[in-house]
Amino acid sequence: MKRYHYVIVGSGLFGSTFAHFAKKAGKKCLVIDKRPCLGGNVYCDNVEGINVHKYGAHIFHTSNKEVWDFVNGIVPFNRYTNCPVANYKGKLYNLPFNMNTFYQMWGVTTPDEAKAKIEEQRKEALEALNGREPANLEEQALSMVGRDIYETLIKGYTEKQWGRSCTKLPAFIIRRLPLRFVFDNNYFNDSYQGIPVGGYNKLIKGLLEGVETRVNCDFFEHGAELTDMAEKIVYTGPIDAYYGYRFGHLAWRSLSFEQEVIEKPNYQGNAVVNHTEREVPYTRIIEHKHFEMFGDAVYDNAKTVITREYSTEWKPGMEPYYPVNDDENEARYKQYKALADQEENVIFGGRLAEYKYYDMAPVIEKVMRCFDN
Ligand code: FAD
Ligand code: UDP
Image 1 (cartoon, rainbow, N blue to C red):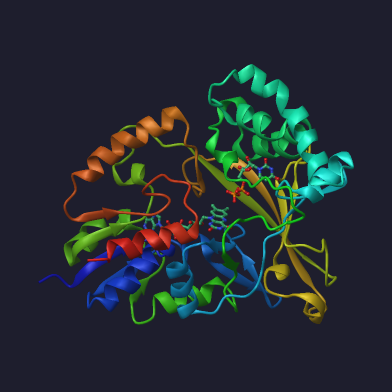
Image 2: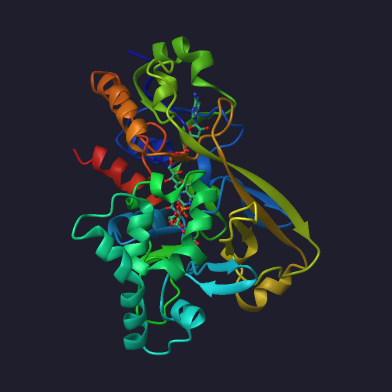
């Protein structure tokens, strides 16, 4: 008998949810994380009484009622609805692309006028495609919304975020953005969304209740000891690191965050303002209090905390954030995945181990399915 049924490497949502269900099934788990905190990318710091999303802004959204009920059973979620605003050369546009955006862009006031304008804008790109599928992000965007929106709201932001030309990026990245002919600034089409009341740390604390945890513990420094103690390892770190980068590094985008406490209660009036101009070096400014404080409550705290988010190419030693799922990296990932598929005592899961652009809810759903039997 080993000491633990599962040693879980990584306390992000995959690892924490796995530990929760394993414990419920009577299994003994140890969750380790190399960071000094638990929760992976959803971890929040408390600064001036405000929950600051330390590893990037996180908005929970899903249409899966089972997932929504599950997380709300751990901690209730608030009514936050993500309505980001884009700033292009000082002019503001609502996102995602909807009647408000079209009015701001072209002055059109009815859905018929907006549709006619979009059709006119898409015409050139559709003719160029001549019936074939868009092969890259630029073709996808131009054939979806046309040149004005592409150049104002997409091109600069995307090239900053990904550090690559839109012609070198996969089309699917942009397909997740809604296009609507109603006045609706809700960024997501999902049935449910919100932020845990009291912040994400409460969700992680709830998931990990009664589970043994160890922080500042890097699997690669204690691998032999940890493997010895466990019947199975659940690994949620980068898959290329697990195999010593033997097929080369997978490419990631990393982020750097510039945090500032501002001596006023309300800085930008919204949680998320994207800066879509190429010349502004950051991609967006997050004002964290707006995730959890609404209406007059914004003014209860005389201070506010903002974060400017910069996107950079990942280099060894940096935090990996977004997988760059281009053809070269997908091919490399497949080589690693073939090794992982042969492991009997290691389960690979989550954003880093599956090299996948995963939202939070699908990660939780994936773990739920692991425990169906
Ligand atoms: P992670 O949260 O990354 O957890 C992995 C953990 O493993 C980390 O804590 C890491 O320290 C640890 N680890 C790695 N290697 C080792 C090692 N060798 N030893 C020990 N520990 C190790 N999703 C949404 O639904 N809505 C959003 O608004 C949203 N915003 C996002 C914004 C950003 C900037 C990013 C990057 C992602 C966003 N996501 C969002 C996606 C969301 O973060 C993921 O779905 C979720 O974090 C996945 O959890 P995970 O456990 O797979 O990974
Ligand atoms: N995007 C854009 N302009 C914006 C917001 C998003 O062009 O103002 C594009 C960009 O390519 C981005 C993609 O849409 O990578 C997906 O955006 P989302 O907000 O879903 O990205 P996230 O940061 O949540 O992964």
